[in-house]
Amino acid sequence: MRDTTVRRNSAVWQVWLWLIGAGFAVLLAGIVFGLQQTGPLCGSPLLPDSRPAETFDALHRGAKSAADCYRSIEVAAVPTWILIALGVVLVLAGVAVRIVAISRTAAAIQKMGGPR
Image (cartoon, rainbow, N blue to C red; front, side, top):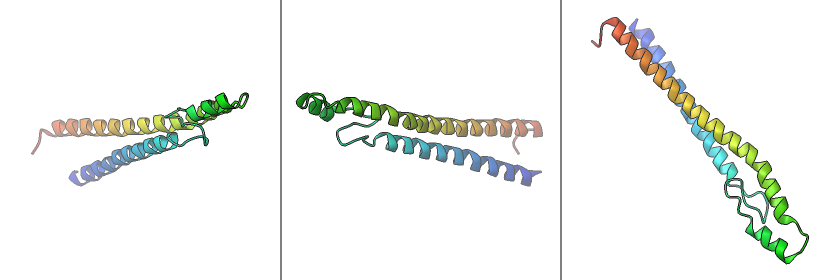
């Protein structure tokens, strides 16, 4: 009985650690992707400052580079926020798995008659 409990706890231990690790990796990838500029005068999805493009538009009438920058930032924001949200969901899933494992272990210990 005790050997199967140890194996089961080891498997649950690995699952929640992998979920949290994968969640943080995906979250970090989303942040790194979100900090990449979308063009030479453009900002990024997480820092959408495109003042150089706006200045270029002010100097060259009709260039519309700022509008192009903001469109490309909007397009790049979709995968950025999907990656960030997926990372947060994976981390929360890992925490939930750990909480369930702890509560099941505590219930099994109480069922067996307490700690020995």
